[in-house]
Image (tube, rainbow, N blue to C red; front, side, top):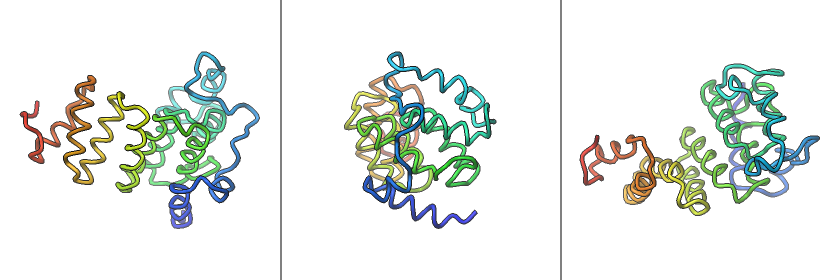
Length: 208
C-alpha cells in the first residue's frame, strides 16, 4: 500500500472542516441515520450494533455481516460519533500498520473528521482521536485534541488521564501532573501515568 497520499490527506483533514475535507470524506447523509451515539434510548442504535458491531467486531477479530472493515464502516456511517467503533477502527489500523482498513470507504482520519463534523461538541470523539494521533506519533496534534476534549468534559477521569499521557509524551510535565491528579481525584484506577511521572521525578509521592 502507498501510504503517502493518505498521510497527506490526513494532514489536511486534521485541520480542515471545509469543502475539501467534506468532499474527500463524504457527506454525512446516510440511508440509515446518521444517529447520535449520545442519544441511546431515544434512537435505535441497537439495530446497527446487533448486526454490525458485535463483540467480535469490537475486538477487531472478524466481521459479522461482511469484512471487518465493512461492518466498522457501516456502523460509523450510521452512527458517526460511536466512540467504541472509532476506537476499534483506530486499533485495527495501528495493529495492521494501515491508514485505511480494508473494506472501509476512507482513511481512518476521515471517520474522525466525519464524527467531529457530525458532533463537534462530543468530547469522547476528540479524546479517541487524540489517542489515535498519539499512537501515530503526532504528539502536538494529539495534545490539541485532548485540550479540546478536557474543555468539553473537564470532570471526565479517563479524558484527563489520557490528556496527562499526551502532555507527558511532550514533556510538558506540569500539565501532565495537573491532569494526572485530576484523573486520580475523580477515581481513575490505573497507576500507569502516576508511575511514569514518578520515574521522571515529577511526582511528590512514591509509585505504587
